[in-house]
Each structure stands twice: as C-alpha cells, then as structure tokens.
Amino acid sequence: MTSIAGLDAATRELLDRYGFDERLFEHLRACVAAGELSAAANAVRGRVEPPLEQDLVSLPSPGEPGYTAAREAGMEALRRGEVAVAVLNGGMATRFGGVVKGVVEAVDGLSFLELKLRETERVAGAAGAEIPFAVMNSFATDEATRAFFGARGIDGPLTFSQSVSLRLTREGELFREADGSLSPYTPGHGDFGPALRASGVLDELRGRGARVLMLSNVDNLGARPDPVVVGMHMLSGRQLTTEVTAKEPGDRGGAPARVDGRPILVEGFRFPSGFDESRIRVFGTNSFVVDLDALEPEYPLTWFYVEKTVDGRTAVQLERLVNELTSLLPTLFLDVPRGGPRGRFFPVKEPEDLDAAREPLRQMLAAPVL
Image (cartoon, rainbow, N blue to C red; front, side, top):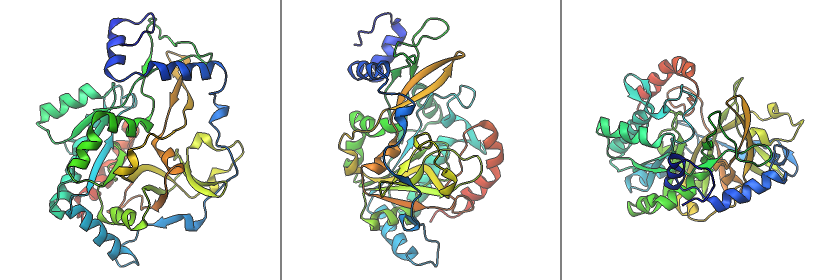
C-alpha cells in the first residue's frame, strides 16, 4: 500500500489497484526537482539526420517483387497459430468528451474495439486459424471497457491494465487539482511490455502458441492483421517491425531518423531545435509487429517530461513510449499505404476525425482481408 500522505481513500485504492510504484515515483519526482528531467532533457542526443531510402522497406503490393514470399510466410505463421493481436486502449479518455474511445460507435453500430476484434476474427476465419486478441486498458478505461464487453457478450479478449502515477508541479511537488485532490494519470504506452508480463498475458499468449504480436492503437482501424505485414516481419529476421506511412499536413508524432548513423523512431518533441522534420517524408503510425520473446526483458526506456494543462494550470507528467524499442531492438521500418482498400492508417483522434473517416473506413472494411 502506498504511503503518500494526504491521499483520500478512493485515490489510495486506485493507486494500489493499478500498480503505482511509489519508489520509482519518488525517484522520478526527485529528478524533476533537480532539473534532471525537463523539456530540454527530452531532446535526443547525437547527430540527427533524415533516414536513408534504404532504411525504409515498402510493403509490396500484389504482383510486386517480394509480395508472394511475404504473403506465404505470413499465411504459414497464421495457420500455425503464431500470430496474436494487441490493442492499446489506455490513456486518459479525454479526447472524446471524457468517454472511452474504444467503446464509442465508430462505423455502422460497431465500436472501435468491436471493429478491431471483428477484423481479427475475419482474418482468423479466412486463414483457418486462431488469433488471440489482447487489450491494454488504463484506470480511466478499464471499468468501462470491461462493462461494455460484458453488455455485448464479448468474452474473447484478454484484458489487462497499464500502471498509474501522479502528476507533479514543475518544481517536483505533488500537483493538486482545483478541489485539492491529487491528480492521477497514465504514464504512456511504454507500459505495454511491463504490463503484459506482470498480468500474465504474455505467458498466456505463449501458451496458445503465439510467436509474434501485432500491436496498434485502438483508434487506428487500418492496423488489422495482414499476412504480408507479418511475412515481411518474419522474413526480415528482426525482432521488431514498425509501420511508417506518408506524411500529410497536420500530422504529428514520431518519425524515423538516423541518430549517429543508426535508424530509430524519434518522437516529434525529441528532435533538436532547428531540425527540419519536413526533410523526412514519412512518420510512425504506432503500429508494430514484435517477437514475443523480445518482450520478455525489462528495457531501460527513457522517461520523458511532458507538460499538460489541468484546471488551467501546468502539470507535469513523466511518460515512456513503446516506440523507443526501435533504439533497443533490430527494427524493420515498413513503409505502408496510408489509405485505400489496403490502407493501414486511418487515425481518429477527435470526434470530427470520425465523421471524415467513416466512408473510407467502410470501403476498407468491405475489402477482402486476405
């Protein structure tokens, strides 16, 4: 049980339930107070350059070189039951008016999570395989998601939750909201590996025969199982594949770059001041294929300093990001189509994005899955 003074019973129960690590929290808090964790400290160190064209490998289309071999390798993996799917359904549930995005209707009466599950089941049925399906929730999405699954009679997904932490002030003190209460938050999707292990879901997936995992955001309905994507990963011999796609105006997020000559995915806020990101034609979709064995170790992911506005004041969050695994594991940077029937990036961050995306999503969902 956490020993932080001044906690109300509800916050204490929430912290204990969702794995609050008080020792780690106090260490990070001291780093903020000492200025060791700051916005300036987020910047990536080393020589940063745009990626070379050979750093990016295009997902082949039917008839193109490599397509048949990748598809066959992916289909074999699917048939052997070696492929699992996981969805990042955590975060703070703030962008859709305080409701949990995963359970919101996305297209034609089906929620985001139902569509992700349906597409996985369609591929599994077409391949004659079983594809285990896991969902990582947060304290802000867990109860609503479980209740939704129960109300809809959905009992297939393996559900687990990421951890929780407390917001700070810039000086490293505990941040308090307008009513004087402490302010919990979720410390980023870098929690995925530790939460997968701690929950037992990693062992469960292995027990079902899975060797590789396809991981994506709940709000990207384009990131569905695809034997060609799986095959490209397996034939690459690398432990991690990260999907990238062509940038469009307004896109934000990480992008592949060479840091001291090595290609990694660099989050947007980490690029050095003055670096021209327009020199990089693609950016990351936060969709991955990763070997399950590669998720067993505990990796030294960087803690990033993030400022948020809460109750009109600045609050500090410390977060880790799953895409930093590209700096730690041999990685294939797979350049995938953004839209169209084989499109793999249909992001829906705000409610208005959904209105614009519905018709293209219908076309994608109507296309053959294999």
